[in-house]
Length: 351
Image: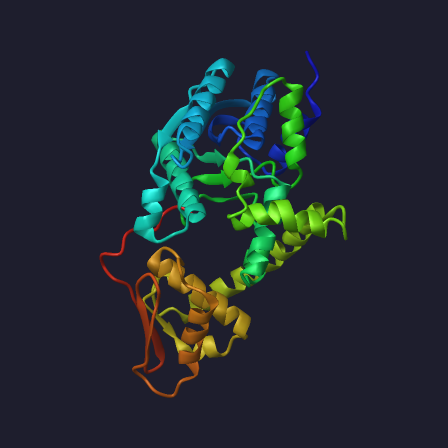
């Protein structure tokens, strides 16, 4: 039997470390770029070498942002999947129109549309896992973006390697390249397999913050530390571990503060006396989780809004109300905080 390539061998080790399924079916997000093509090729290698007994479904969302180039990429992904022996799931979405309707920027709108598509594809095909090809480079860019936005430990933790695709979903979102693969590794592997990949010209458009970080900021920072990307990856792992511990403690605080309801995260009211006994960091996390559970999302909810709700706890007067962006309001009456969410608020989109 032909020996595994180093790239496929590293993927297999990470696959087993993350305890991802070795049988059944998985959705593989394939944009056509080097990262996602490398992931698809490596999985194909592992399956054909009988290290994994998976049925893989390549999935591609045409964002319709680049005219004929977007259409070309969709056809290219479908052709690659067919040549490898797989059935591709290819759909289109008008992301520009979606961005106008939701008042998101193009990046946010494209991201939400993509994960919504992947979640629906997984559900339609009775698949419990969705794979994306995010790399260490993507992790570093995400951390720096969040740092410049003033994020706390959660944002600076970057992306998780494995998590539910959206809140309370049974569908797992996994990023098996995230902790070890660089963009150069994926492109090199594609060349070794003599497989071309698509080039997205938007990845060179410096009107996008992420692209400026990739092309300007990271190269400058690497003059101070040539292994900066790996260093940021390690820092994110440390912060993620700390953040999980704080989140568990915040959930416990939320549980005991709920007004006698079984599902604390969806409780309509919280006891102020118990919240006031906790350190500020736990209170703030508990309040965020409370809002998330009741609304289904935290869109447009920033630290300033959480601090405003926190301030209500220390108010001696009842009747004050905090309006939340994106829907909902929080008021204090007596010894309780009350969260009111519009009944017609739509279900949150996948994260």
